[in-house]
Length: 466
Image (cartoon, rainbow, N blue to C red; front, top):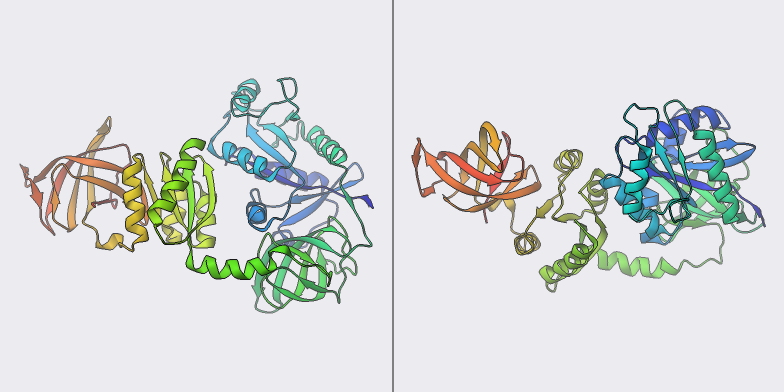
């Protein structure tokens, strides 16, 4: 056994400086010059600090890290939680904290953007405390460092903390043991065949070795390092690109060259795959933990005898990561008392991921039942919004639209849809045609509406009726 380099993942809210921090580390501490695009192909890269190698998962919130609970694989050894000193704890900060805690790995907090005029590190520390992150000196043992990823201030000290945390974990590997590692990326190349990015965690992998995961196998034909060079021996914790798999392995799976190794999930994976093919995949989001547990029960109840599979469940707004998770697994996204981030809404429309949200539990249950029973939104009564008049007054606003499928009645409740995404609900307060109050609007009629809703309504929005 000998000491091995740590594998680090950097997480946090969008725009808090994760990418800037990775870029700064890449410029100042990358051990070897990268070949064009290979880091992206592998999903990780190597840095060197004070003579010690460190492997960074390249993309914040990398898919392999997100999927590791599903496959039981431990991708990262240590996490760095980035929070902006001028912005404090945000929804994705909370999401990252929960993911790190669920992964049961140690973490360090990087309080970024201290170079900004409105930076308030103490506020960030207080908000972290309110969210259960007990920093050193504030009743806990979570190390932190104030940094500027833009200027580099504090980054050397942060890397020192990474090495210290690595030493505390006493990370070791046996070079003589069979190779074991994690699948980071997996794709088909029209010229080279199947390219698989990996990080090896133990043992040594060589060209010619038989290699397999719970779902795929092959024989290693070549191993390419982050510097773009071929190698005859891949050792921990080096990231590399492997050619030789006969089929695409799943991102987040463990791999090995040990012919005796039996993946506990191998048999279950085959059975699970068959079961999963019949189960409805669902991503759940809620405003708090108690709501999350209630929502799980609601989904099972709404499904009845239909099998469902909870792909992911977490507290906070519906984000791009949630939509990406749903898109990868073909899942429905259900949110209770949560908002849909603008970027997530746009991505859901582009990927045709269905998102159902509501502030009222029984309405949410009804919508989920309708979806699971195959009620197509295209078959529901609806009004397409053609114009929005003036500024909203509280939750009241005036809009104009055309009844696409009717009839629609005054005082009816509706959902606001943007593409395939339900972004909120509301109620018609007054319905008019040709400036006269009416009780009901038939198909193809153009109408004016005074509505009450907390959701944003714009030209192109659709009001959907039950």
